[in-house]
Length: 347
Ligand code: FES
Ligand SMILES: [Fe+2]
Image: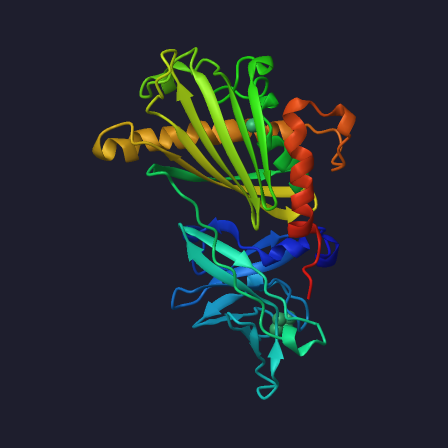
């Protein structure tokens, strides 16, 4: 795919969590982000860096290169690239050549990427370097991280977001976290210029016995969702709680922070942080409960991926008269997605 044809390319100006820090050793790794093929590498000093994959000399993949000091060395003719994109060419040492480099940060155990493009405006007032937005942050609500999951969805960003902001499908697709009766769901939608928020309340499906072993939730509980979606980058924070028949809030709750990372026009990566209370004492929680909570959540996300893989076509247009009462947020998300991912920023 050509870099210029990916319609989410404007979204590269946002920070995206692309892969786990521990996945990047001394061997360069090729990845695609919003249609742009890039190579990540780690310098001898441990700094993570990313440059465009194609060597500008004679088009060798820099993923086949090797790291020497703070340079990524192309395996074909030995040109080398530093993390800022400065090129050293053995036969033209005085030439000031540059290659596309990406901004890279490491936080929360992940590697985050964004692209800062120089202004092309003739207005001198706009010649300042692009702002360097802070990495996204979120409130963990005092919960413990159960794990981070990665999923690759064979669907465009819009259709992937559609799935993860409506709950109607939780009755049919999901096995654990879902409503037993969609017609009994109370639903509320709140709109802000930069965010959408949905609340859903209704009867929870029966949990599988294994899961019931260490959480206090029970069949017949009310399942409550509070989901907030923001768009710079595209991110949904899911707060999920359960209430028993007596009206008492259960101790077990689940917080999921999901980044929607556009890979290309028809592929989206989900990078998902899963949080819960500590349900077992001491290290037992970290070694036993946390992996199970993460695995159950990842399993539920696999079901979403399966559902999205069955879409008969990947047209992102919605037909308003075919949308149900739980789908109203989809149209609102479309409106906010456009300036964030589909329109070039004003210069
Ligand atoms: S193709 Fe990379 S140095 Fe020649
Ligand atoms: Fe789902």
